[in-house]
Amino acid sequence: MSMVEKRVQKGVERGQQFEIFVDGEKILAYEGETIGAALMAAGRRTLRYTNKYKHPRGLYCGIGLCQECRMVINGVPNTQACQTLATPGCQVETQQREKYSTGLTG
Amino acid sequence: MKESEFAIIGGGPGGIAAAIVAAKAGVKVTLLDENERPGGQIYRQFEKGYKVTDSKVLGRDYEKGLELLRQFSSLSDKIRYLNNATVWGIFKSRTLAFARKGTSSSLSFKNLLVATGAYDRPVPLPGWTLPGVFTAGGAQRLVKTERVLPGENILLAGTGPLQLVLAHQILNAGGKIEAILESGNISKNWLRILMGIWGNWDYLKEGWRYLRHIQKAGVPLLRNHIILEVHGDGQVEEAVIAKVDKSWRPKPDTERTVKVDTVCLGYGLVSSTELALLAECEHKYELCLGGYIPVRSESMETTVPGIYAVGDGAGVAGSKVAIEEGRIAGVSIARSLGYISDADASTRIRIFQKHLNKFNRLRRVLDEMSVPGQGLYELAKDDTVLCRCEEITLKEIKKALADGTIQAKDLKRMTRIGMGACEGRMCGPALIEIMRYQPNASPEGPGYLLPRPSIKPIALGVIAASKQEE
Ligand SMILES: Cc1cc2nc3c(=O)[nH]c(=O)nc-3n(C[C@H](O)[C@H](O)[C@H](O)COP(=O)(O)OP(=O)(O)OC[C@H]3O[C@@H](n4cnc5c(N)ncnc54)[C@H](O)[C@@H]3O)c2cc1C
Ligand code: FES
Image (tube, rainbow over all chains, first blue to last red; front, top):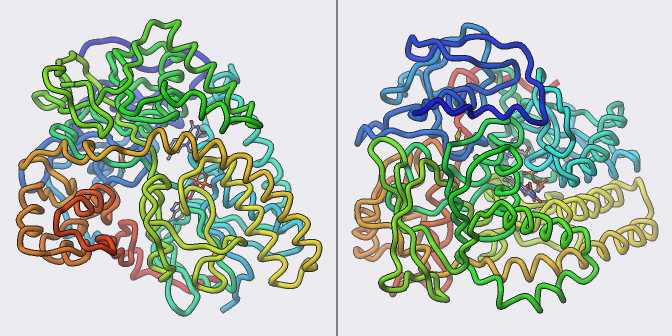
């Protein structure tokens, strides 16, 4: 994606800026920002690939319901990027397939 | 185990308004909400770290919401507020189960209010699973509370006033909108709208302001248009749009392709009824109000005594209605617990009811304009995924339907539709519409995908580490 700034500067001031790691690559995030938002700001839209057809999926409902934003966050699979706040240095991985072995119900 | 006199699920305008009136009457209230802070969808607050420097970012309605939130927090000695608490089940024994901070607890209650709100009506169409397709509400959350634009060139497609709100917010944030597609036909209904809005000047002014803003920015608002398909290699690259007739079916030779990198789908909202369904409250079908919604008495009580439902979760009608309904439920419960007299309660309920009637007049008009046309549910093709979680296509559903399945719950068993992580929230509403239009549809309707606990994905470890609520 191109380099157009997606973070809106108007109307709010952000807190502390820090780096997080997405599939090993550094991206910027701010205090109070969800991982999903930081990824959208960085133009990284694919958050996971589906089990059956290996299709890419991204942020969809943004309010914790659709489960499309499930990523591996700090080693924990099936973590919702739209509901998880970024923290300095956190490790995020694109989820390649659902890891039900960790015991997710529903 | 201690029993709560009055437990509320949901900290949006409905739940909060109920908590305030009940607590003021002396009721001991417990309010559970899954978010860090109270406010629900419309009064969602910024996270720590953000400082709002321009209150216009939030909108006027938000200011009013802050007043409600202030009252709520000033009653903190009377209201036990559990944030980050996700309710995942309700059981016959009048207990509910919730996950919080890595453990699961249960809470028994005498009265319960379900105020769980609503979410964007999901509409399956070719390409709707591509990264870069957002629900209007999801895009709105990004722009409004995260201050991040969802993309560089955005197409808004859907119906109803929330689209205009989103457009206004995107433009305010400096974003670019290619066009807004309104599948309904607003213009013909102007007279009716004005009559409905009579006495609702606040709403009228806001709507007018948004329209003016959109016009001034030169964004085309295309009435009687629909999005047919989204294309792209790995993410959104273009969308196919067309003119539609009254039933929202595309008119021949009106198709065209627009280059956009982002699509926001906003076809109105549907109620979150999973918990009321689990509690075995009777539901009825109301297309304008968001599908199956709980049957309620005038005091907002469902068919299960002591269980009440208000706000968008009990029929989509907006925050103002949610507040008045919440107040009615709060007063009714205070009366049933003996904190206020019948006479006092009736007087107060009459006042809330009057406000409610005023807002409802407007809502009815807006709803009628944006009731989804049948064509909306003919957009999916055979290979379109209906169930995002289990990746079940329309073709698989058609096959089960051709085999004579007419109940949604049977279809779930046969195809696994609705068995995935979202618990049928993303496929259920469209599935019901598709089934309703089948030639062999059952006259009583297809029913719904019966939810089961847990209604939100909870790690098994959390449920195993459960404890009794102190
Ligand atoms: C994404 C979105 C954007 C919207 N934008 C606008 C707008 O700009 N203008 C406008 O006028 N209206 C808007 N609306 C509509 C408006 O938000 C609602 O009409 C209003 O918030 C309804 O209030 P409520 O109390 O019924 O529900 P909500 O405000 O939705 O509150 C419900 C609360 O319950 C919580 N909850 C749900 N299930 C559980 C559970 N199982 N456990 C714990 N907590 C739970 C939710 O997280 C939420 O906090 C929007 C709605 C949505 C969904
Ligand atoms: S985007 Fe839907 S749950 Fe996160």
